[in-house]
Length: 356
Ligand code: GLY
Image (cartoon, rainbow, N blue to C red; front, side, top):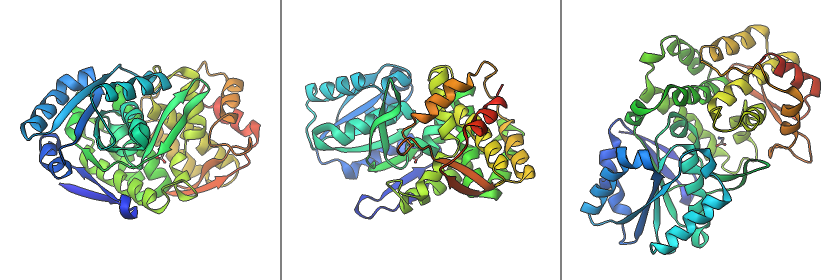
């Protein structure tokens, strides 16, 4: 089993990665069982595929465990679902010593983490991500949130889990769109941090059916853990993880979270950011083309009907903006970032033109 540490002093934790890890989780969690009430938060399909077995195995070794089943989709990241989950926890007897286990993709993890960070002023939680994207990104680093009508992740906290368990076997039951979404974030890690990894990912994507998921997950998790360990609260370095996200979030909210997956929107956002990087003379044409060629290996959704003015409006209300000024993470080479706070509106509009 590969263990990677997020080093945050007394809030440090391990990310364990291994195919088949699900079956070992009860044994690993045993040391955290003090006789408290446990709750598994998940969704119906995941409950029948994996949750039922997990709960049975935990109950066999004396865990007092209940389950909360959330509805499907990104729409669970809402204040309404947050309140419903907290009240459900109260009704099944959870107190301030209780522990949450989250089993699901990014939306389940983000909502459950937000519940954990606020329920009775904060209780411990453990993440079991089941999508590629959640494994390499959202389950690590403690970002928790719900959405508001006005924008994604507007209400949230940074609250670290006690441990993260990654079992790449979950990926066998994922649909293609979901895996493609993870590829988007995977390319991001190479683009912002590691040129060699970028080249490897690009080669692996020539034959996606032989993509070495476990190896790629380990590479990505190492990068994310390293960055979060250096800058947990996103005061500086962690900002680079937002490469492709400024325009990506706007595209995601424009098309609706059900029509486009997060990583797909980020991939489109990275194309725009690559275009802007070149237009600002930071990134060579050759490097920009490399980025584009790799992103084009993904089967990205058709965006020919995109409305540039609407996207620009959404970008301006992004939560990453400071006094109305939007920060952009750009590239100066593959593997090297540069954060800029002034990108002319016509550069943004021209970058959106390439998505048509
Ligand atoms: N997904 C970006 C971050 O965790 O900072």
